[in-house]
Image (spheres, rainbow, N blue to C red):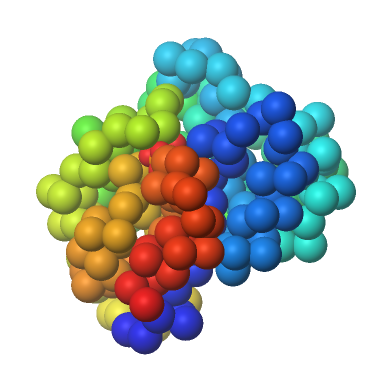
Length: 221
Ligand code: DX5
Ligand code: ZN
């Protein structure tokens, strides 16, 4: 796959929130394709990040698509608020602990005018997402246990990426295959080789000196 087919989505979880607007402008200038917003509720994951209000502030700072990743329980209850805040895509979790009717939430996301995505944790088998693949525009494979930035990428998750590629090819469907967590240049290369086309990265971009260099390194150019 050639590098321009790769979408780079910086996760603002790793940005400096004291100057969030500037951070967004900087990654946009540096060639980011989407802005990834990690929403955590302190229940589904052991951390709390931010909600729809911050997403609407981000929306006002950029024209880039906003990719909202809900690591929360009862995502269905919040979909319309994130859609109103300006989300272009909304990704929810398949695990039982997310406590919602996954198929219904995915339909709700599409009805709200957003692209539905589904995510699975490292401990969750690929089989858990299979019943929903027809309904989604993106599969987000967590390559770390969700909750915190700056963790180490788990290469064994590439198995799920390969299964997603196989499903996509045998069903002739155009879904994005995203990897999220611990993505640096080396892990980006591995993910792309295995068939991922969306790279979500926090630390390797926002903790770099030069954001455009960091984004180009992820694309492998
Ligand atoms: C993990 C989040 C990720 C992650 C990315 O809970 O979903 O988006 O923070 O950040 P890095 O690149 O720092 O692992
Ligand atoms: Zn994320």
